[in-house]
Length: 161
View: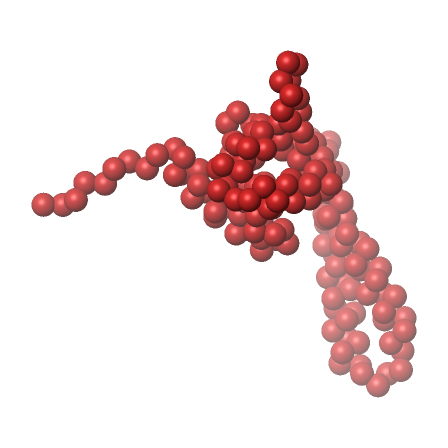
């Protein structure tokens, strides 16, 4: 006789996705809790949760939730809203600001290319040609990516829904 599996609850599914997405966001540079809070707010229904709902879902301390929310608010990708007659603040993803931050991060490739070019100006001794050649290759790669990203952003903004 085979054992019958119970269907996974919606909460369990969301928890599993929050963990998976949290790992991704952690690898992208967020702290583990910040990544999980961000993931939870992406998946939340309704798309806004108060502090205690977030804390309860995460099963985490007030300070860790507070720190994560402050970071995400300072970054602009999370904002809070209020409702008339309700003293609580509800946190939600700010898609417009997230879009702006993404564009800013992609455009940092141009800044990195300029920094590498500045480094190469100082590395004129000819003593380390192999290393300098690798830096030139890296600078060219950044310039290529920056140009491509600018073109893609322009195309998107002309055609976006």
